[in-house]
Length: 493
Image (cartoon, rainbow, N blue to C red; front, side, top):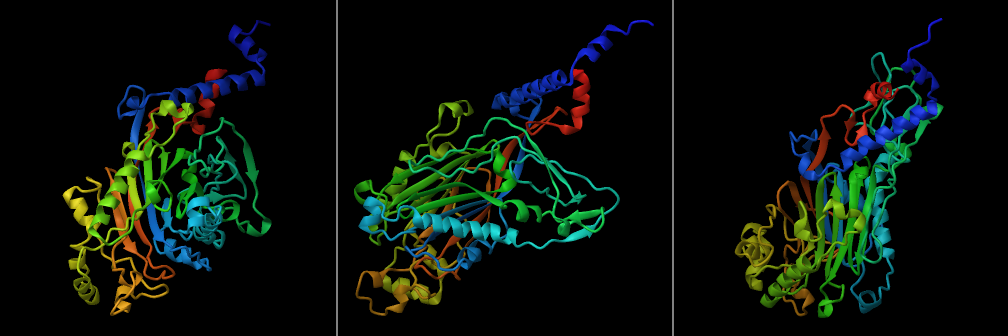
């Protein structure tokens, strides 16, 4: 009997372990080549085989001065966050989550208790609706499929319902443990070592469809296994507090989360006034969110003090970048980012005599009142935040109300005696942005939330996010394309 060809001999002698090891080695090499390509080679039509594409994500930004009052009902945050269409990212900023007493300003008597309570309320507002979802099944045609996603300890649903046959398979490629900012002002999240695992999940018998050709609604799996939104940053500076949440299927694309705080209060260094800024990278785009509480006051000199606070925040905000992230060339300052949003209680007032101001408020003549708005005038003449943009204001002044009422303090006291009674209505709570790639869809206040002397203000943006795509059939979004697996296996053998 003739001897088989040499290449057949080698094939027989190779063990399955050797073959698997070579395949893993090849996968790692392909992935490393993708991740090490410089950003300049990612432009469309580049010789490296990568293209830059654009995703559009919905971004919710909200600000609320809560006057040191913690809501007693969960419905407060549900009323605010649930009044808009669901977004992909939620950035929520508060001012005065604790009373600005000497104890809280100097020695932090609160010790983070209020921030944790607000985080719990946000979590319930964003995720409770998913956990309470009903199960709906509808018939589909012929085949049932299994879909694959890359998640860790959770299953991501596709954008449209997938056929369901009673089992779910998924792989996990990176550690998605959430990261909140630490007490030193730096909150970072990094990808872990590349690990892979697989799991087959079979739902309880009572949840199985009657027939094999049924569809499982795409909003069901998150409610069973994990929250729809994951927190990626949380930071408190005395009364200032910022909490950032992102949709679960976007979480693995977030990296380099960092937080910077600037104190501008008493003597310019205490935290009763100041800012909390959050920097993060999503895909190939850098975001920066600045929540601030500027100096108060109705005098003309207070305008300059607020402008000085803004300049100080822009100058002093710095994001620490570790050596591990040095190669990514991440921005260290606010203006170095691609998408920048500034929000908070900016405290700019209305420059009008009290009598004229009361007359316009009584008539609800917001158009003429806005002409005397200090921030709009400063933006127009370049006194502060030159080049920044604010959307049209189509809501009443958000300050200063009697608590649990829709009546302004100034209108409640015909002959005010104290300084508190003389506080005039103003648009203190604002949201602005800088640069390209952001389009504001909505800018509004919520008049139903009346626990504070301020009304919450929110904006919905469409944010453009850049991400890389490969022309190679072997890689999709930095991972091996499972559809090409048999062909690669044959190349190794």
